[in-house]
Image (cartoon, rainbow, N blue to C red; front, side):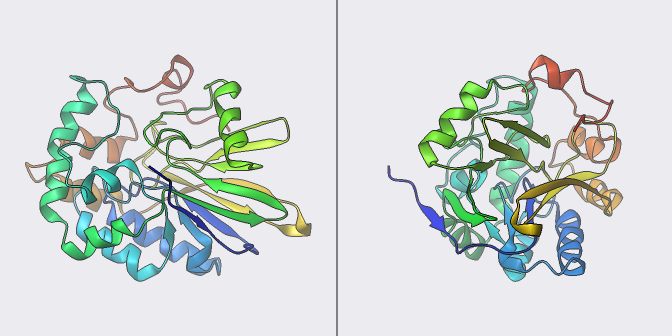
Amino acid sequence: MDKKIEHKKNLKGKVLLFGGVYSNLQALEKLKSIAEEENILPENCICTGDIVGYCAQPEETVQLFKLWGAKSIAGNVEIQLREGAENCGCDFKAGGRCDGFSQLWYPYAQSKLSKSSLDFMKTLPDNLQFEHAGKKVTVVHGSYFNISEFIFKSTPWETKSKNFKATKSDVIIAGHCGLPFHHIEENKMWLNPGVIGMPANDGSPQVWYMILNDEKEKLSFSHHTMDYNYTLTSKLMQNDLLPQEYARTIITGIWDNCEILPPMESGWQGFGIPL
């Protein structure tokens, strides 16, 4: 099937990048306020997908996202929900803990979303491309070839390189893996802003986003952490319908398990993200 790729005009100034809102309304509210404080226009705020996920307010989160006017590509969760699929399509190991948890939060999200929200998901492109500071940028979810592919800092450059060649890009912005990182080789940049809906397994309840800038007509990037009302997020998840392990992660900043992580990233658990 042909990809739906949205091409945007040459973006100027700051560009706010984030991923995995995961139905975390409180985190989205805080990020929106940060964008407004930084005078970043909604069309310069870009999500790598999975607006819906593990937390308690999927409908409210989608509606706020629409109201804000930020841009997003479709994550695997959006695609599965809008197609009425029976699972999240996250490519979790069958029978693993993440797979078991998804059998709780995914049907919960299905039961809460309105037709308006599902119709909005149908408008989301598979990829987004734009020019920034003379660089061609492509936004993907997992990878250009596989929306559910987990690509990490430790993933070999050879795997990443194929994405640059296929998209003819200088910069790839990706999501899905849940951890912020950057990897620069061969004058190419693979950037993952991290997610705002869940902590990064680093022992802190803070979440991550990224800002691109074009000062002096040169592309630069910076990673940022964000505080928000995570105690409310966790409390709302304690509803006997969602995984309580995820409600604890919101507070502790530690994932219940590391089954999707390569050895290098697994070793970072609780010790912070080395950027």
